[in-house]
Amino acid sequence: MSKQQRYFVTGGAGFIGSHLVENLLARGAAVAVLDDLSSGRLENLAGVADHPSLQIHVGGLDDEERLDALTGAADTVVHLAAAVGVERVVREPLRTMESNLFGFERVLDAAARHSRRVLVASSSEVYGKGGKSPFSEDDDVVLGATTKGRWSYAATKMVGEFLTLAHRRQSGLEGVVCRFFNTIGPRQSDQYGMVAPRFVRQALAGKPLTVYGDGSQSRCFCDVRDVVEAVALLAETPEAAGLVVNVGSDREISILELAEMVLRLTGSGSTIERVPYEDAYEPGFEDIVRRVPDTARIRNLIGWQPRRTLEQTLQAIIADERRKMKLPSPAREGAWAAAGD
Ligand code: UDP
Image (cartoon, rainbow, N blue to C red; front, top):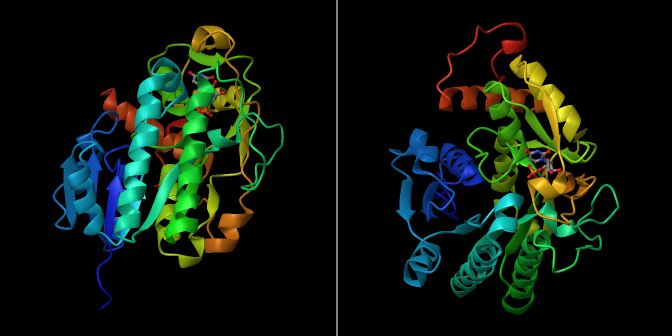
């Protein structure tokens, strides 16, 4: 039998993190989680909390001793801990920059000290508002002015990418940058502005669905369970070291169409309300009109592509939100059919 792989996952109680932990445990790996529970929740790990190969540590990345020990005890580090969500970034830019920059640097330093492979979470925000579609990993990035809060998040993620690649060059660190595109699924909080859980909750509560701008902006949504499968595969792929890799779906949908799909799948009688961007975020807010990944690199590298359709993912979110809102489960038929898996 081959040796049990040991993973250290920062942000492991978060939305993507908890799904990754489940995936890794199901592969037979041992997993140590470090999470400060600022946006993660222990409840996200309830399904695996008693697993003999899981350790959960509550704390921040500023505890350097613990960070060092957990890194040294692992074969691979996956760094997901970060401040997320455009609304939160606009609201709390200092906290976002602090955790995304200093925490990131500490994790990389620890991985370099112990010569551990490290996968780091970046974001499609890094592409900024470049007009090109789809976005390929080596494309130019086009960020807006520093006076516009949104772009601080992209800038921190860019610095994280530069640091990872610099460590690769200078210390041979096996770093992999995962540029996540819009990732959705059960357990995602609607608190930080993410559109899918928010529309589902609004629809289930009979409230208007808040479409920002005219709703013609588009995104590609990928199921979190597919995303973490990609991360697990990348972690096992030595050729990924030193690369930036887009991780996402290339099925494009406008936000207005997404709202309509949520109404259809929930059977809700809610209306759609258009909200000007400046009311939703801040004056002068710039949205990204289209965001589509070029997925050639990840396909060639690990043969991965998403398995679940957007409809299946939305059904899973609807089931999850119904449970959280303590709504009775609908009959398993017609528009109410339960999620595929
Ligand atoms: N959005 C919206 N209504 C909401 C929340 C978000 O119309 O209640 C829009 C948002 O302006 C963006 C898209 O949905 O155009 C995706 O937003 P999200 O914050 O989920 O991800 P982003 O792609 O902005 O990182």
